[in-house]
Length: 401
Ligand code: AMP
Image (cartoon, rainbow, N blue to C red; front, side, top):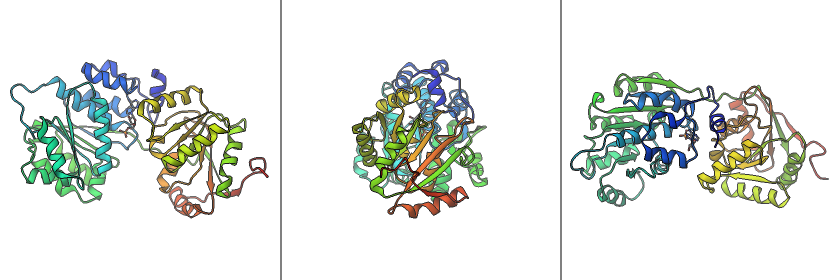
């Protein structure tokens, strides 16, 4: 990946010129970063890493998709590698703990940790509620654990049974603190934090999508002289996106999509569908019709996704078919159209999707297909946007008679 593409992927409010190679990171960690194809830091990484790599605490206001996970994982890994434990290591005494509110998030963080830390020799264990306790305990007792990634409830279970000790923790990460607050986890998190060393004796990193009074209060209690970094969330892109909704029968969607893609204005198009299998189906059908496209979904390996994204950015492929999760990583300027082959079930996803176009001062077009089985999703989207969407029949020329 060239510097330009890696930077533009994260061109949210500020682009970053900081390269990982300039951060003086441990070489085994650097190898993992390179293998993932990361070259330049995302804005939050560029802002936070110079401080956290020096051992300072940090409070970050950032949402998913900003690269915050890598920001804290790189901090943890680098610190653990730079300060190896002298003398004997004990089982069930992790050196770093990451707490996140949901099972999905914990698994995602652990997966990112496995990728980033591939060449470091550091071990990561996940402790998640609703899954086999004995198996997780076995992992903890297999070899000294470096990093524990956990949901609050399950970590409390481990602490209460004496199956884990946190008194040697060097780094503590609290991810999505606002969601932990909403979900009522703060009493549990407080108990966990109390079992770790004093805040002056550990590094604490706290991330939250919002900075409410309560969150700032907790952040103050848990961190020591922190730096605060804010990355602005994406705004509802109503001004720069011409949003169209076509009413059609669902069996007509493929031919209308094909006609849209064949029009000369469709220079660079992202097609969103709701599920991986839908994405694959659309992709295969388009390929069959001779339209070259790329696929971005959880079914595809990260390396392949990175390559596909590169080809899309360079213009080698004109069409991408994506799921919402995979689509969040797409920060490409110059996307002319976004097509919602399926209407998203979560209105927030609609905003994310259409925000892939109309970026960097340009205007874009979003076309959503509404049919008999999903038009009921429109009112919630309109409520979030705060304006009605104009639904029309498919223009002549785009529908095969
Ligand atoms: P997150 O905000 O942690 O959910 O990360 C969003 C996505 O960006 C993940 O798929 C990461 O693998 C990817 N990512 C994180 N940092 C970088 C970077 N510096 N360059 C390219 N991709 C990145």
